[in-house]
Length: 118
Length: 107
Image 1: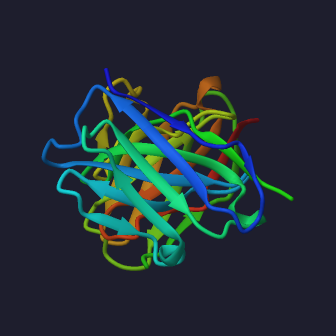
Image 2: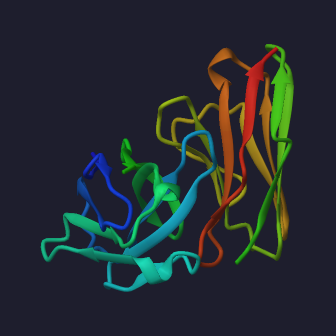
């Protein structure tokens, strides 16, 4: 059974660095073709793909945020991390991680709400 | 980036009615198009992938079609549980991009 779960700080101040963790089970990120992505959704708005890391350790970023994003994974291939630097109010959103094979997201986490506020 | 233009923004349908949602890509995405349903407070759920393949467990009243830059999702016989917001996603090229969403309600 594939499950993913996001965790994060809940709330943080502008200009800080947001650190998110995606913990998953039921698959290994070392398996060929596996990719874990981060996607976010401000309240009442559409979805925005942020970044991905694949089974080979290759990383992909949304150019609109690339300079602020860092995606990584742990050596046991059971967690994926996302850091977003210099957050501001516009980064307030629910952040999801999702597993894909060839860009089809069949499995999503429940999402974690991050609020940026002073 | 590939832009996904989704229409209509909202839709109201009667029970049993057939509805269609469209997505147009700014360039050929070679059928790398998926449709998702999102209910309030929940994560998106995959309905259709590769433009027309039905995800396991998804009712057969959902169908997808299209090629090149034009794609559509059809619900043949609206049911109460089909209320929600529907999104298309192109998986042809990074950065992956979603449509703006279609809110579907029961009339």
